[in-house]
Amino acid sequence: LVEVLSEGKDGLSSPKGLLTALATGFSTLGAAVAHAHGFQWGHILGIMIRVATQAAVYTRVLRMPLPGSCKDSVDIGLITNLFSADLWRFEVFTIFFPYLILTPIHVALSVFLAWVYFVGPACLAALGVVLLFAPLQAKLAKVNAKYRE
Image (cartoon, rainbow, N blue to C red; front, side, top):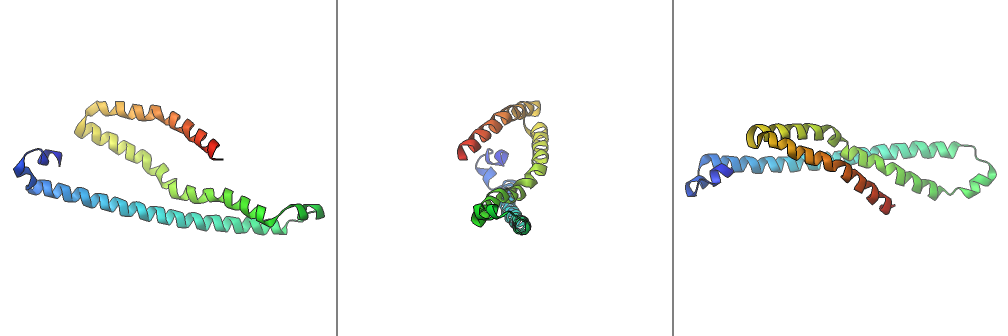
């Protein structure tokens, strides 16, 4: 698309440029729709897993024989709140789990395309910078989680 647009006035009306622009637009639209559907189904699956796990654990807790003093000190609202806070992670896991599989494929494909069509071996330098900053990003995420709690 950049090649066609840099040709000048005639390049804007060329069929190759128009087809490339249309293909780019439709692929972006398709990626947005697929991304939204993936998040929706991941969220629904996470809710189903969370509710099923919460019901199973809650049923088990209600059947446990507790001494008389424990029954008075344990509030049902507290148990429900703890379940909701901890089991919410199932929802987050099911939403983002596909990225554990897709990210290495995406990185490999991006490096391959950058190597073959654009900058050659220099794309490995960019990949190295990204990989060097990954531990820093993990450390900052831990600090952020500490302050969030």
